[in-house]
Image 1 (cartoon, chains in turn cyan, orange, green):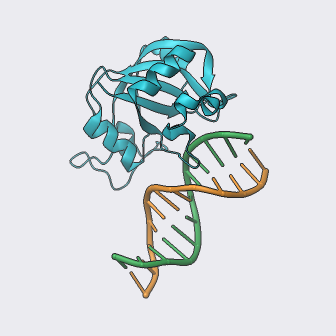
Image 2 (cartoon, chains in turn yellow, green, brown):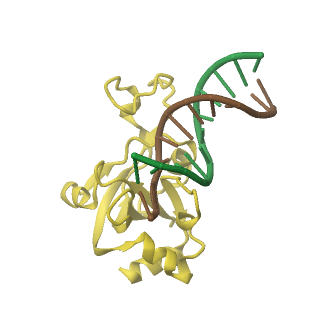
Length: 150
DNA sequence: GCCAACGTTGGC
DNA sequence: GCCAACGTTGGC
């Protein structure tokens, strides 16, 4: 069992959208480290902290879980997509996605400000200055502590 | 809207 | 393979 934090801006996709849809194909990841997590390390059933970035306030807004094995992200082949990648081919896809399923919405969210103030969470990648990776690995301890704070 | 951090690109 | 330029992220 692995634990993850996955970032998305609320304008792009929100926890309410996920609550409505049930499952979401997490497309648009265009960072190799984040892609490698999805491609190589994620397993169905892994637990996910759903993080809203550029939000008011930013923070963990709920829980989700990994609901599929990785597959090619179709937006890389779609010329009309913002995520189109000229160098990707269907024979050799460059980017993958996984399905993410809704588990729970936090009300209220666990804000970034709270996370920064909590000594138990001091080691989280999220609170490292300049850390922008959109998919991060999270320890079981940190995951469970955030669930407790919610 | 600002700006620091950092990943990617491309010339050499 | 170096590294400067450029683009993006994301908190504030």
